[in-house]
Length: 158
Image (tube, rainbow, N blue to C red; front, side, top):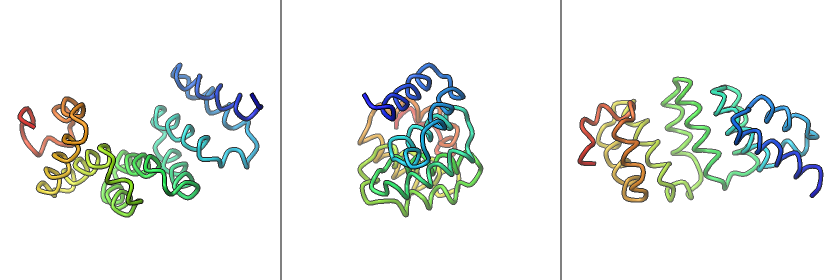
């Protein structure tokens, strides 16, 4: 295993142990070019999100989306970070302007349902929520307790 892979693996391990500061130290120890690899950026994003460092995570997402524009996760995470920062309209736009592959992701539709709901677009929210639940029934339980979806009313029949 080369040193880069070893460092990424160590950062992943610290992330899984819920030790974000140490995980980020591992990533920061990489040479600058290695820090711009998609796998390292994606790991940085989820670590920063775990630590609720939304602004930094959003910036890392921007870099990830630039380096790997075909990867849906960068756009989904970027939008989520913006939403957490109170920029729900921008979050919605990030998803809508993302790569076509996003529409095949249940999380895309679920998050878009949340953003539409928060923005008062309830019919669009219902349509995206229905699509997300059709794609992944496991989201149903989360939807029932998600505060962003409260304006849709009782989701026990969802």
